[in-house]
Image (cartoon, rainbow, N blue to C red; front, side, top):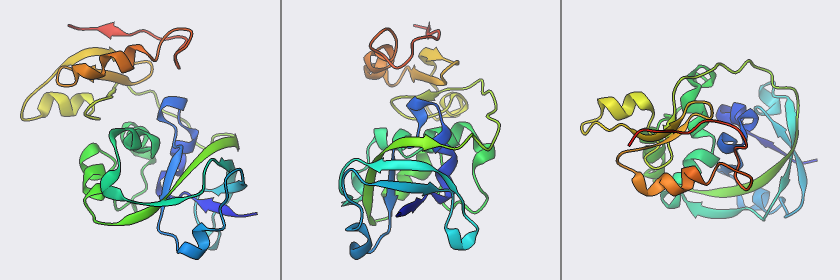
Length: 201
């Protein structure tokens, strides 16, 4: 069975659904990328087997991997690549990680000029989470992807228009166009069936 080695961001596979890593970008050779087919089930491993890696679950490939310039990544990719989760839980970021997990680090990665294979997948199963998740009294803005501390210390300080510290998401005063997206996460058709959204207009 083929496998994907997640390396630095493997803990984000265990994140809550709205922060979960559901896409990965790989510097694969074309011949290796062609081995991964839509619908194929592959092993998820925390790091390369040659470096002592172990299986942490299984994922299903949702579409054939395709090559894309990193410059085309979007705000959604910041969340879907697991960066937002790793930013909130910096204790899980390995010292060897060469990319910053804040939005500045993500944007620097975007500007690297590289093109990588994009792999979209569905998580089928995971082992029991091998780490304890700390409670965080913080949130990340769905628009600018900045944490609370970054909002207040920025050159142009902002505050929360709406924030949910239970799910660690919010919308700051500079990103009000994202309010409908945040509000859409609640209710019967939303992702959050429970939780409290505090509005601070």
